[in-house]
Image (cartoon, rainbow, N blue to C red; front, top):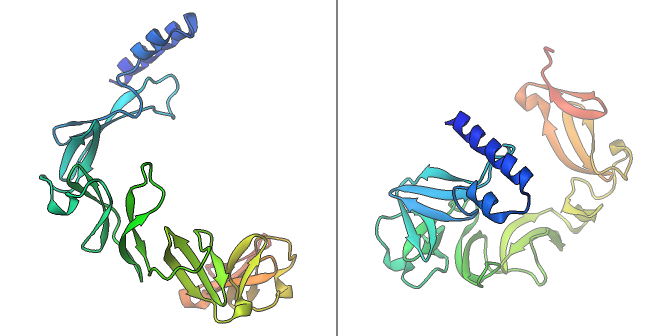
Amino acid sequence: MRLARIRIARSCQILITALSGTASLLAGCNECSQGETRCDGNTYMSCEYDADADFEPIRWRRDTCPVACREVAGHASCVDTVTPVPECAGGDDDICVDDVPTGCLGGYPIHHSRCEGLTHCFAGTICGGDRGQRTAICAIDANAPPSCSGNPACYGSVLTSCECGLVVAREDCGGVDFCRTVGGLTRCTATAAPDPRCGDPTKSSSSFCDGNTAVGCGYGYTWSATDCASIMYTCRVTGGQATCEDPSR
């Protein structure tokens, strides 16, 4: 099969080289139109170009769906039920099912990743989307500060990120002086002032050993600390960077 594809691809290459700009010849080399999808029984088929293979035409990629494959309005997708469900009867807006953000396609649910940590599924927000659909996402709560966005920002001592008007990440830095924006990066710092052991305060990344603790820095502030002894390693500075290393080596 691979040899046959190479022969076809080379033939297409010769045709395209000899008659460049002839759309009909180029289309004849492809099995389908890029972006096209369909179902073949329980198999999801997507028309894709293999970017890693030179002169390969566009071909069908086949993937077996865990539950079922369905086509709706010319679009195919793997879905999570064999028959439509009442929860998706309202259209193609996202919903929450058992606290899991879930998309709907013609009445069929398509589950996304389960919410983790302190987050829960929130549905009904209009955010992004090609057609202004209502979106379901994992978030902590709806108490988003004004102007909060996906870029972390300090609201007092609390480092907060938002999406679709919902708080998706929140960390109390322990004090106003420990939540900082330095070098275009906003995060909690371990110190309220630059630590001279970090070295050049203009560097985005540096580190040092504090006893057997590897301390990470950014722009002169300490960001993180790893206790090497807790993993039975030793803190060493190699190539200007502090890392936890196997003491036997």
